[in-house]
View (cartoon, rainbow, N blue to C red):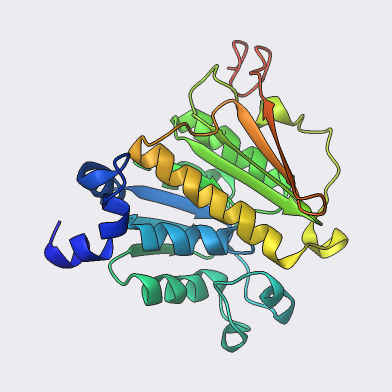
Amino acid sequence: MDDPQLLRYGRQILLPEIGIEGQERLLDSRVLIIGMGGLGSPVAIYLAAAGVGRLSLVDHDRVELSNLQRQIAHSAEDIGVAKVESARAAIHRINPECQTRLFQEKADPALLDRLLPGLDLVVDACDNFATRFAINQACVRHGVPLVSGAAVRWEGQITVFSGKAGEGCYRCLYPEDGEDENTCSTTGVASPLVGIIGSLQAMEAIKVLTGAGEPLFSRLLAYDGLAATWRTLRLRSDPQCPVCGAVSP
């Protein structure tokens, strides 16, 4: 680490749970963020600011006026621009040393299998169950930790999965055919909510990458913005889970 980096990350290096060693781990880390919307925007900006060395950004969409109420990586000047391009510009304004790879396409199984080898972490910031299930299955298949977050209306949640078979996964939490699809575009969302959950996703990512603290493994943190309350739920792995359980192929 050179002198400018010591100055840039000095306040973080002062934390005994991170220190020089933890900061160097961040600088050497490779993280994939899927979704450059309300959740992915603060995740990408905070991970870049914290010193994560390489970020891969996946999103097939372009910036629209309706995004600007909550997707803080984008501005009015970015309308019509690919979200991954707009997010990269925001990242480089914060930290030009952060290396970015852009994938303006949907996160289907083929793309995930291509990107996950060699990664240290995946952050799921997408907004639909089909993609979440595909991300989860790929993370288990490749043994990559996953930070999963969701936010809609006034409520949000976040959890972390190790990516190891038998230790629980997103499919243990949600049956693939048992959830209604609630999205911001159909049910609405309070603007700061995605910032709260996205910032927590960035925090959990930093903890996993540096070994600091206790990540939300086997726990789900739920936030109710209207009541201003938090709940922590203990998660159990499903031994019959078709993705990570004992019966998985």
